Length: 167
Image (cartoon, rainbow, N blue to C red; front, side):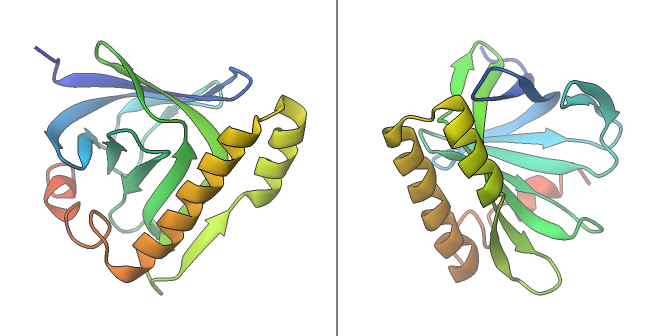
């Protein structure tokens, strides 16, 4: 029986720490596992202790090259997707490798943007990203650029019921 608490661990491709925090398992459906993070949750960001000031919901999809973070105001990003390796679940811990690229939808304008292409290129060269990993990451970013803009679920309304549980 899975625990109500899941540990979310993001690392970079070279194994260095990126993000690490506990989240509450809200549900699992055909889209993936929905996790809630409340205000005041203690976390680690780039190896430094941090405390979440704004709650959010994280969707860890089944077998996809991304995770989706859904945010309430005042965060300027309504949806923030990290391009990652597919989730690797070990018990109640989910391990993800952050591949630098992010796809974001801005709250005020609905603008969808691809971010951190320079970091992706730098890490691709420095860490030696294999060609198949690069192709999968770029394909995920392309898919998300379309999906965040055209009303595809879970990016239209599906996330709202889960977000309402943590705000």
